[in-house]
Length: 201
Image (tube, rainbow, N blue to C red; front, side, top):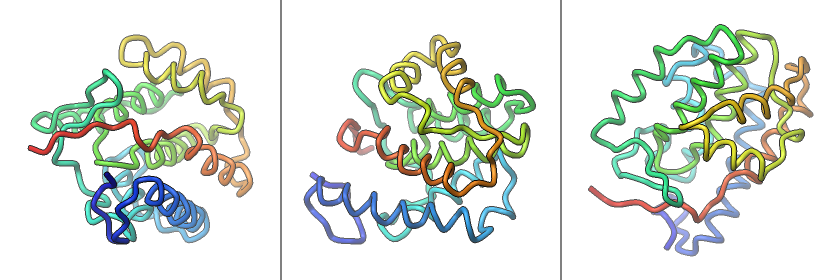
């Protein structure tokens, strides 16, 4: 079953294909149009703005905090009843060093504030924090998919793996469209479309 969507698509594979096509185009626009210039890097407001921009043509819930509990595999993301508090706690986390920024990224991933599209939105959010604080971004094409997924899976318990993996992929090419677009392409490669389970409240 496909998620309810504005495109009236009922096949989940077709929805995934259209979602990728539309949100990739919107992600490319974000690099060019200065839409996020009025938001502060590291805030939930910026993350919600990214999500809303990427997915507003597809989902009614774009940019809105989810109202269902979700899990991937055996891992349950932050329960809805604690989600707002979790988001506020993540926002307060420091972000002045690489280690602090990745810790913040890991915690926002655990919160998983949206019903769909968390990984794609949060990776753009992460790069904007790195760009602001360290004048660096991640070259996602240099990050192995399987290593990344395993490291993120283990990150709530032990975040040293994800820190090392992403540190090796840091680059100072913050203004290069090619690096950004490689990251956008890879974000769809990393994100599984059919792995979420949800329970309506």
